[in-house]
Length: 110
Image (cartoon, rainbow, N blue to C red):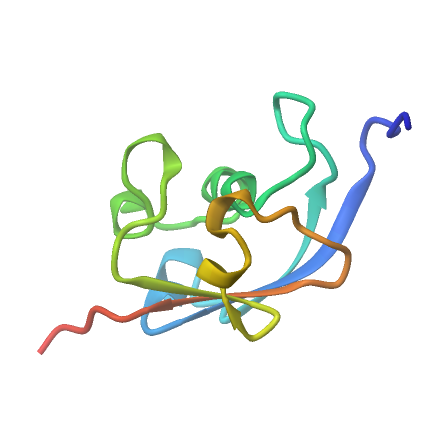
């Protein structure tokens, strides 16, 4: 099946636990994620993380969200449609139309 260039998947991305400060204090983003990643493969949560860093992150402290190679930083809980992403395949989960993906920082200052 051929996918037209520019086709997107509408999803909702939410941030909590302080992560919203990295995204202009927005707790919710309506995202149009490209259907295919840069390698021509179906869009995954791993690609979404890179896409958010490149297009939505307003704070220069990217290291508070990801480590090298845009892998999510430990201490960030991810829920895909209210289920722990570990049950869904973590970064390999293929994003679907209408998904709700929540990123929650479990690290709190004191």
